[in-house]
Length: 97
Image (tube, rainbow, N blue to C red; front, side):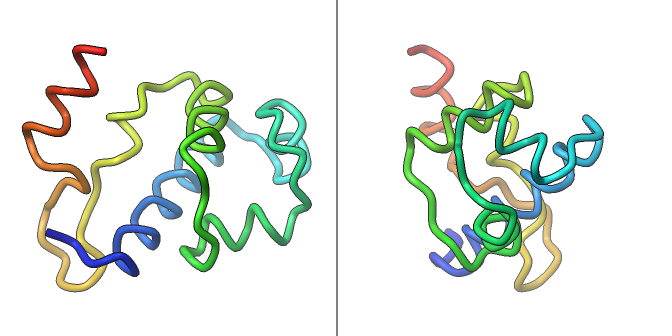
């Protein structure tokens, strides 16, 4: 299981990657997501330095048009192993909501 620091690093990396794929600037992303956060706060989220609420994650995934499960998988920043941020039973629970 990932520690809290690596969890937020990976989550932020995923958010940034998908935001850039969608070609949103930080300002545009703040507006379309409904986050109403300034660029430095969104940048801090993307760099794993700012925690976010479940509701903020909900707004982010809605703006990026992805499932919450999709944003929670990536590489473990501490050692490079392919590792999901949630275990399989957590993912199954989310998919069945």
